[in-house]
Image 1: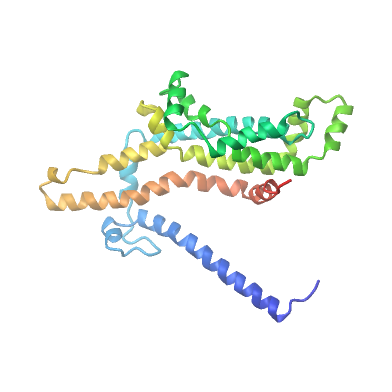
Image 2: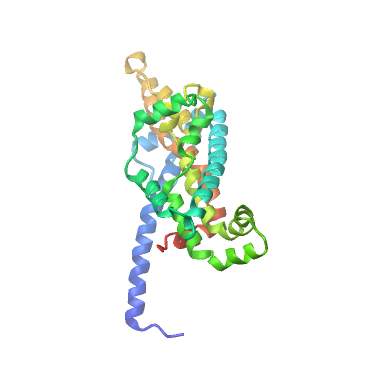
Amino acid sequence: MARENRSDRAFNMVNYLILTAFFLMVLYPLLYVVAASFSAPIAVITGRVWLLPVEPNLEGYKAVFRHKLIKTGYMNSFFYASVGTAVNVFMTVLAAYPLSRRDMPGRNLVMFAFAFTMMFSGGLIPTYLLVRNLGLLDTRTAMILPTAVGVWQVIIARTYFQSTLPPSLLEASRIDGCSDFRFVAAVVLPLSGPIIAVISLFYAVAHWNAFFNALIYLTTPSKYPLQLVLRDVLIQNEMDLTSFTDIETLAAKENLIELLKYSLIVVASLPIIMVYPFIQRYFVKGIMIGAIKG
């Protein structure tokens, strides 16, 4: 192994300093949000929170979990994220694997049709009319079916299959009498753990943060995802200034609203943050291989 000379050490040191600076720039806002969510409202308003909670309390979280639909919102978001991600991954693999096969007739035309939808779409109103005409308004299916396939994820998975699955593997399986569907189930999927973990994370985060589709398609509160419930929590805690005559009550309410913003961020982000470490080891490998153009 070659020894590093002085210029190499200086170069590496500069890189480490720059990366450390970027890391701190990303980490500090996250720590600040968590610290603010556990601090007293007046400490947040006056800017006394920097890194650690000031006058720790749980007022923000108590206000969040007092909402009667908070548990329902969590359950709905888990349902949309789990079922929606399963549907997304299933449809993505069904689309990406055939497109990775060089013997598929017209695959370039199909790929062009997929890519075309990334640049042009029907728009909000035609999409809403389509969902309405299909009878999906105010149903859980409306949160899953319209976003069943992500074109970017199809492209990443297609590239991964092309890069990691040699044609000889398919030829050998055919000699053994393996059908295409069995080849996908018995060979392709077990060898594609990294890319499946990557696209699953992409899809799960998108479903967990889904807000606009729920706002458009859902009208029954019991079907609202967590993001929409948290929006209602914030709205319900806002008040008409003319309805308060006690200045102390008014100030306390305003402070609570400011504190709620940070508590809502933690409540909405915590499940995804907890899941990420379990698939992080697949993430880098899958996204790097899937990003190779070929």
